[in-house]
Amino acid sequence: MKLFLSFILLFSFAQAQTVGVNINDVNANESTTIEIKKNNGDAYGAIVKPNEPLFEITQGEEDLSGDGAPLLKEARNNWKKTCNDWKKEFKDMNKLNQILSMNCGKQSCTTEAMETVCSSKATYKLKVRVN
Image (cartoon, rainbow, N blue to C red; front, side, top):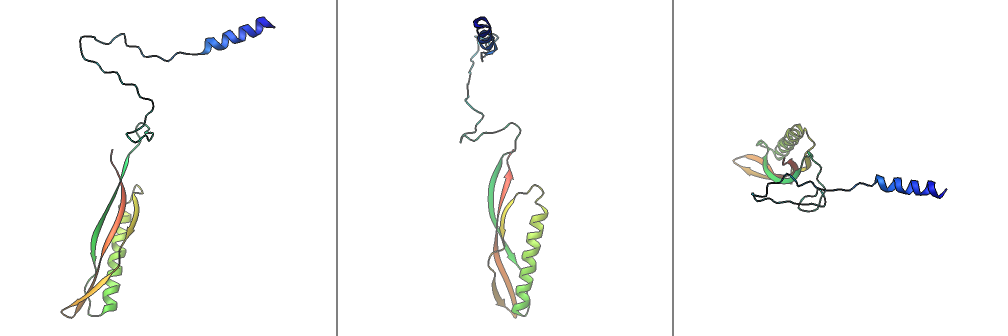
């Protein structure tokens, strides 16, 4: 029985492997740098998998203005149409699910020369692929 246990222990030690780096073919006449890293992390310690896309968060704003109309109610409806068109256009460009948020903002209406125009500052936040 002791022989059997000894054989099992010897076999289990024989299975252990040594991790090493072969540097026999390095030319000593040139400057050489060897770098050893603990993980595949980026500068912030996040694990980066090879060939995985990296994204950056981008935000911005746009001016939205509806068509002018003689009545305030019509001008507000024109602004709502402009807002919906802007959202639809943004969503159509969203093939890779990049939109994080989008908002048409609060409308403000002004009247000039018998015509009312409603406008706002629309904001958006996107994730953009950087590699």
